[in-house]
Image (tube, rainbow, N blue to C red; front, side, top):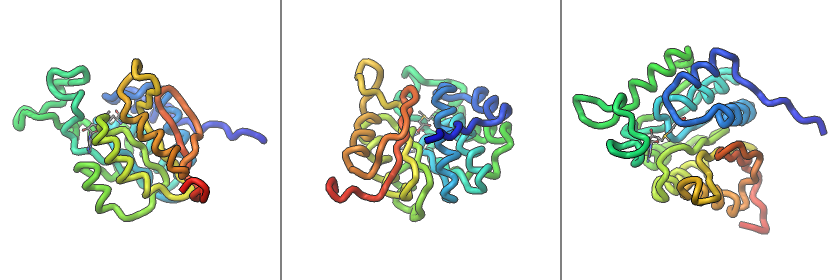
Amino acid sequence: MEQQAAAVPAAPVLAAFENAKGFMPVDEGLALYDAAVRAAGLGLPLLEVGTYCGRSTVLLADAARRAGVLALTVDHHRGSEEQQPGWEYHDPEVVDPVVGRMDTLPTFRRTLHAAGLEEHVVALVGRSPQVAAVWQGPLGLVFVDGGHTDEHASGDYEGWAPKVADGGLLVIHDVFPDPADGGQAPYRIFLRALESGLFTEVSVTGSLRVLRKSAPDAGRR
Ligand SMILES: C[S@@+](CC[C@H](N)C(=O)[O-])C[C@H]1O[C@@H](n2cnc3c(N)ncnc32)[C@H](O)[C@@H]1O
């Protein structure tokens, strides 16, 4: 069977992604973009958990724009554990000097503005489980890149995976089967997704795993 060529972002979109603060390498970004373009064909919103400064959001936004759907992105914008002062991924430039806590929302807004993609994104500012609890609709894609503790990763999986439409995609970042490479919480939710019998793996790029939701396998329910 002929393989479909991967969808790639136009040069200005890729440049906006590369210029944004964030943690995602280009190869994983391209895999996320391709997944988002395919999922957007379902005509449903694409949702991200873990906006940070909008690096990955740029790619979801452009995929959404191409299909005429919306990208939704959830974050409380106060940073994950490892981004707090004194920790490995802390960036003092994203501390609100008045409040004295991290606030990545202004930088996120600048990223989207620079990319010219503001009108294709709805930012949901809040805790992922709280937002999931009030979000009713089906989603074409859920990208999990929020908190990396078991509590947060499980909350993201339990809150959002049930909302992926049939044929839609669940994408999980920072999946490291070997503990020497990184924390295990995203890997554990990846395993849960496979063991549910509802998701099958579509691709692996670095630590980014793409899974497709299909009708429940009666034997494994
Ligand atoms: C690894 S960063 C996201 C990186 C981003 N996707 C990128 O490409 O640059 C994780 C983000 O998740 C957010 N976060 C962590 N736990 C959360 C929770 N329970 N609800 C909402 N946001 C959360 C943090 O504030 C942080 O901005």
